[in-house]
Length: 104
Image 1: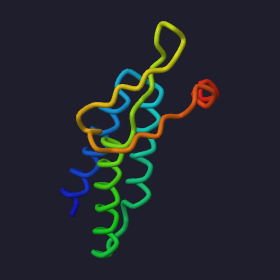
Image 2: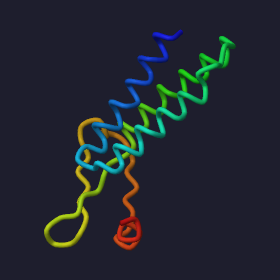
Image 3: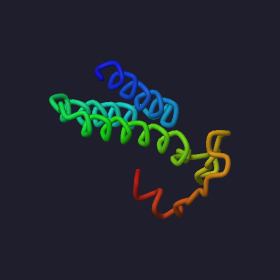
């Protein structure tokens, strides 16, 4: 199970690195959050609980890779969203300019 946990951990980190490439703050914070979640469950021994946690990690990796697209500020002062092939078929919910500006 330790090997499976390590594979799941790396997959989630890989998904965050790809999704948030170029955003140092989000990369640092997401890596810290992923580590925190795995550390919180380090001592889980129940096979059923371990399987559930591994499945949640796989789902998180998939969700981050396919359902999150980072908006980038363009030279005109607006935000652009450029979905990649991983997002094909997904329904994208694009936040308003007002919501994006509040997030900064």
